[in-house]
Length: 321
Image (cartoon, rainbow, N blue to C red; front, side, top):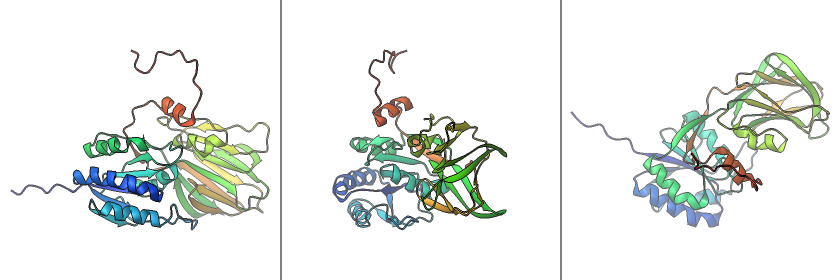
């Protein structure tokens, strides 16, 4: 009886690198993965639906060429890019991570981020840890957890116009940016508030440290499943953020029919919201799988990333028993 052929290991790399970073990063990625016989795919230069490139096209091309000197590498387009891979590796910041989620989610492949950007809240490791992190990937020394997403449906006069999804947040905004939107927010089929605002954010716990945080929303620990409702610059005295059950059915309706709105998912994907339209939001049917190597508590990550003051703390410390 013939032995089964072991499937070749492959990792999809989604990178947003400045040209000067390529010479530093590519040899490390190639050395670790090439030495372990792990094949590398690189996502081709991305042109978002807005027409703006995620990174200068020359940078991904140079990265691909540099990797190919040392390890088997292929460029792939969006469709099926992560199929058959064991991991999607993100080299960049949070915007790059969200880009990677677009290809990792349909394939149900976990994502692991190495921060080469600014805050990098979604990353598991920093640039100086790249060697160690890649070695852990090769050794399979990581765990996988699920992060909830949001499914979005835009309806007009009983007809579904479009569908989308979000990992961080869904933002309902005024297309023209002139004036404000008059919005009614519905939870589980019942109206709960109406106000004028620049817009409305509906966020996951993962997205609570992103746009929703900037708009005054609460920070929610990512192991809690919930849906956050955060008004953006509301023209009302008593409008406050709300946190609902993850099973809640959320709907947002602009009431002043003369204005077009836009529904923006993760700051990347846009859906037009015509006058008298309706946005319906539910917990996503497909989660994002998150590869974890960082065992630091979320509170420590929060303090480190946001540089929060903790002077005067007299706690027992993380190693206390």
